[in-house]
Length: 414
Image 1 (tube, rainbow, N blue to C red):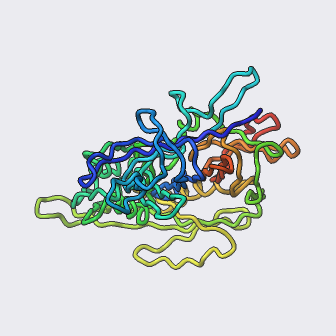
Image 2 (cartoon, rainbow, N blue to C red; image 1 turned 60 degrees about the horizontal axis):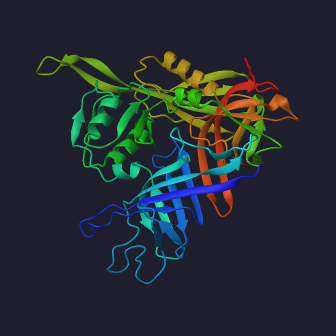
Image 3 (tube, rainbow, N blue to C red; image 1 turned 180 degrees about the vertical axis):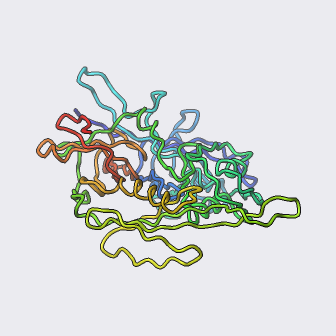
């Protein structure tokens, strides 16, 4: 098949007090280059678009609009209204047009409404001053950097969903709390919403990321129903896996991995408040779990003492947070179950491929090898980096963990 690269970048101007008539919607069907990210490992997904100046684009009325000329103010560097400003919305769509086996003219991948697939939506966060023009962009987290959280103390019984929903009142964003999590009394003071989310990530390992206008929060980051609805995305060696130099196949016996698991709980005390309520204090339980000589080994931090664990210099150490676990034995059991996901024989790292099938964070990735089918497996996608423009369309897909092994036909092996 012959694939023709398709790209559409839509920039919608946002009026300001200084420029109330900035209402153009500019559609670019040619871009010098672009890159974008889709991941839960960073609060903010970002993009960068490089726009050539001496081309024509179409406005919202489908009329050609020349980018060049002395009367066009690209970034706000003279008295004319600028074409691009911080806060303008931007959508990047990308894919291919091709003829299928039945000779049908196909556009793909597409959204459910038949339009070209969206790989990034957000806001311009920086306008470059050079030519070609560089636009730095951020997803909806950019908005939360502009919104102040209320100065407020939340009760120990308030869940993460309750707290974040309260901070997002009056915004177009919804909250999908992937876990129902309480973590004691929590206070916000002179912070933006994004700064609060960053503190929740740092102190409690409660992740936050946007999927469209839905903010997903919690200790669990993947919505498995998304992957089930989309189906596994299949990639094959010797076919569409273009660069696998950072994709390592390791045996389980060669892996050195440990984790620190902890839980913060409210513990009742014998005394009461003036209103008769039982006083509580915060208790932190913590355990180090490592895998040694084919078995898990636990090291429990004594209550009230600072942890002093030797670093895992020969491998990797992860941190897991569990909600309201009051017993170190139960905490160790949960840590072992979570850590077990990362002890497997299979691929680790990332690989580069074309833009079909389009992959998003949380998708299930089937990796097949015709020559070595014993290496076949299904993996969870941790992140995707998109890039395109004059050089084509590429995806760099990073794997999180093995879901299941697959046979030569791609069927699951229990």
